[in-house]
Image (cartoon, one colour):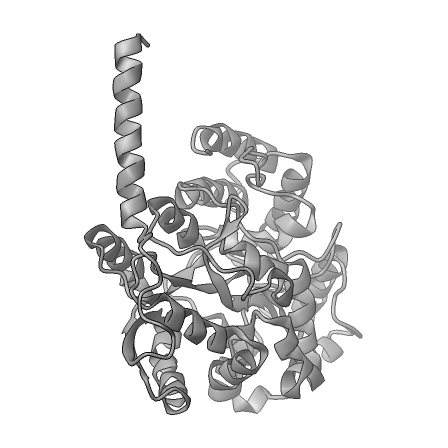
Length: 413
């Protein structure tokens, strides 16, 4: 590059940086926390529907603050956030999925978290890491999510299974025993299609594998990952898992009938089972992901972020603090059954006394967060394709992951 071009490039970069700084709202926090003001808050899915009730409670204790909650569907959340960011019209506080954080932090539209107010050690590591980009936090963990093993304990007894499978070898032995005892399938895992990787994560992480390292190196064809996919594929080879993909498939129906006695699921499944299938209450249980090198599971959840352009940053911070301290988190669990991100919330009530909740807590302690990559959705789609190639018997795990490795290397940053 010649000097003139280099100078022009530098000028453009500087102008961009200045624009980004302006967009970042560096003009202070605006109104004081206790001044009369209205906070705008966007929350998604079920959380958006439930947060309004919490906001009313908050307003009673803070009469100068009006909290306007706008519920937004997850299907349009990303689109709305991008449009609002481009227009400089983000709400004061917004719920952010973990996969969004890197993108919006990079835009310069999120206010960095005040780590003198919100302490990293108060939260599950996986929860905090979802809001941390290049060592700086932009989101405070609101709730966390992971996957554990659901299994029919009553059918286990009939199959001669005396305890929950603790290792990957025991998991397959249990699947075989359930099937011999009359179950149609031994384990429900996804054979292909969009987000098959979420079903695979439990095998991958437990084997010590990754897709991309935190420093941006593609490692999807590592020996650990290949071993995990070979194990995953063996369930389909042996007829222990269903090879076809059924659109809109609801595993809880087959779990209720006994056709599927085991599957990996998130915390919301417990409420669905109790509500929709009361006849099997007490006949199922949860257990940690069976271990290979370790008991590994995916980490999900949401963080709360404050707009860098907000004129109500102090009040926004107080509201976020209310939602994410131990008391607020325990209350949110009672309302939604979302798993608290604040570990102190687990020290009281059902969270402390329930054996089932202990399973979730233990799993969260080792759950793994996907690395921050702008093209993560595209990256995982390559893994989806590799998994399906194996489950359908079209290629070996090594061949499928070697191909994915070559494709992913061009996508990582």
